[in-house]
Image 1: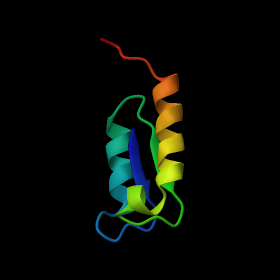
Image 2 (image 1 turned 180 degrees about the horizontal axis):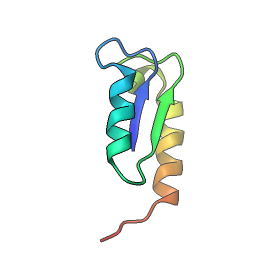
Image 3 (image 1 turned 90 degrees about the horizontal axis):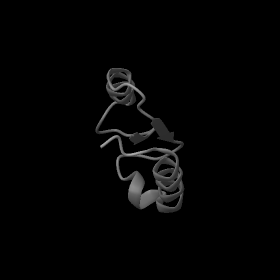
Image 4 (image 1 turned 45 degrees about the vertical axis):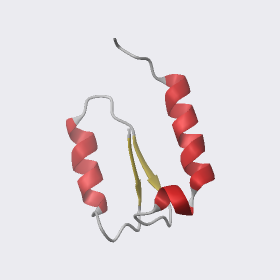
Length: 61
């Protein structure tokens, strides 16, 4: 999973699109109005996304 803020001034949003495009089955989540510190700015939203991701994906190993 790639999770980013759509207002990240340190890492361009297009980088996340490139990364996600190179990982088969990758999830790309962009948190609206979040910057580079999205985990601090929107902890509840990030937590919900992580919970959904972890509950719906399987460990291939």
